[in-house]
Length: 127
Image (tube, rainbow, N blue to C red; front, side, top):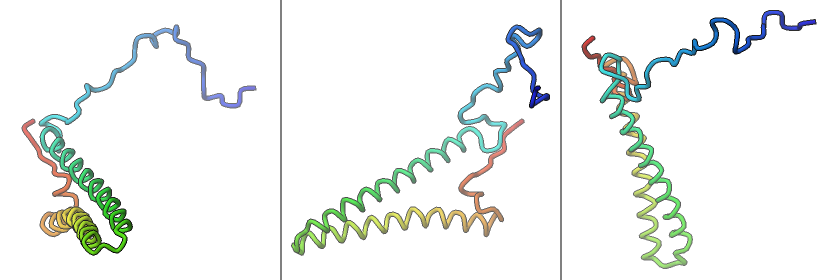
């Protein structure tokens, strides 16, 4: 007894099934001019995101190294001050990175009514 009567067996040799594989649309990694947000805008947006992620990872690693310096200072005031300055600068860098995204979203919402307008711009080109 067939439990799933809807499903049927399909063989590779069956009639018109052979050779009808659709490869889909051509691969365009950054779109084209006719698609909204395609081309240079999408490329620039991806590069900007990569830079922000890199800056965040760098700040996190710098914070870890500064914490290790702080723990291994052993009471030396110069080493403590240097480690504390590095911790402060790392935290300030993270605040600047997050704040830039927050400000862009806030200005995009206030001016354009869409929080992602500045972060994900849509540029319409010729058709």
